[in-house]
Length: 107
Image 1 (cartoon, rainbow, N blue to C red):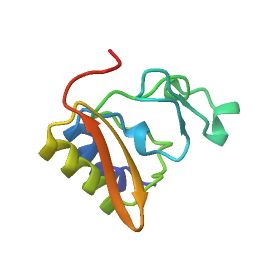
Image 2 (spheres, one colour):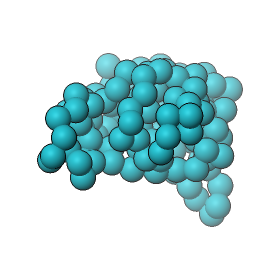
Image 3 (tube, rainbow, N blue to C red):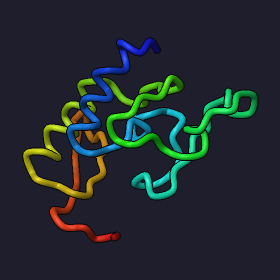
């Protein structure tokens, strides 16, 4: 994916102080507390983001979305409108469902 295409994903995730990795199909981890990248190139290319998540607002050339822009926009909109500081999402019956908390539970 070209950098220009990633910019919308970066803007959306940055709006909720979330790393781009959260919506990457190669992301493994939870809440970016201990995440790692399982990109197939990680065996062959030395790249810092293969070991740690990028910070909110940062780009990663290896990013490949796990969800559509519409899905991510729905999640971001709900997180912002509800004031969630911790959240998780799922798709159920064709709808994006976002669960969250307005206070930190796992700090």
